[in-house]
Length: 248
Length: 247
Image 1 (cartoon, rainbow over the protein chains, first blue to last red):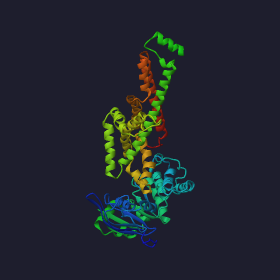
Image 2: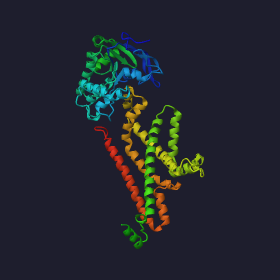
Image 3: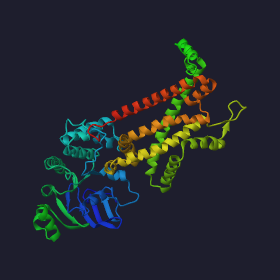
Image 4: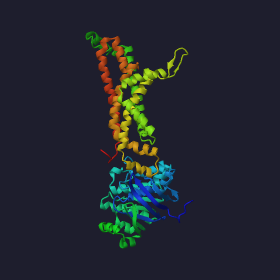
């Protein structure tokens, strides 16, 4: 079955994930359409990060199905490279390669994984650095950049692979309030350009502003979901209400 | 100069710097130093390769592979290198095939020099595996995950991300082990590898009056050799320092 853009770009069906005896995801089902921005919110330990890590196979699942552009992720013969070309990921701790300059960080994957020509890759990497507003920082090492700058390099590094979907795993959680904004602006621009984004976040204001759909998870299940307009005002489940009252 | 040492040997009979004026003895010393350098370079290179490959295999999925590496480390780390050397040369040496370059005498395909290199490299390699493992474990799992999420294969991730970072962490420990290795090459003396100690002993057996100066020479040469190694390693360490990372 080949995937066409009118079908969900990502589709989760009854996803179950356990770490040993601890079941972290207890049957998660949702679809994401191309160009949509999805925010996943919920208390810590509710399985949010695990959930998006399963989408690009950093974690395996025990039961259910995850497809990305029609490709089944829960498959022992999964072509991981093919999957990871489609899905970019940005982490809470940036996870840049500390021994490479910002520009080299952005260039590495296209050079090594996609085996693209160096001149092209460099040109594109410089454009991406400009796009995340880090022009002039190309030759800085990650250790010489602020958290917000590192996180934007990480975003550029993922974009260099030209992914169809971007996963953001609490990317602003390790930043101070002032630098959170510069990273969120970058993500907002991406979303505006039509990039499909799945974000795990605690930034409610941001979620309200950019998300097409918000999912609230607790203890491994989706408790409630909806577009931001209704989600924040009409939450009916007591768990959602309690969470929102604490955070807003 | 030559006359000075000739005179000194006559005036002070226990201080016969024979290799300063006797060409034959000088040749022995020089060829001994050259052999020691060759041994040291070969063993350092091979033991580092063993360390890298061993550390890579330690992370293998197949349990038998990991077990094999663990067994290798236990054996070579927990037995004396001298005994290993004798075992390699005298025990294993019996079973290696021979060839005859002149059609007359049979020669084993692995010479005593070859056995010394193999045995010492495996000895130092066992420590290097542990040293590299410690370095690799110091690289955050999350950094590896980042490379994985970018589509790196395990080998690419190891080569371009994990190893370069692990190297920086384990250089001081590696340094120590390699210094030890250079000094341990003297044990090849026991299987008649004509390295510096072997040549020195052969000189003072022939000329007991040359014993003191030759011993002094031994210390001086090893101090210099190790100094060169340490100097090189420190330069390397400095060259690999990353701005804003670690220390």
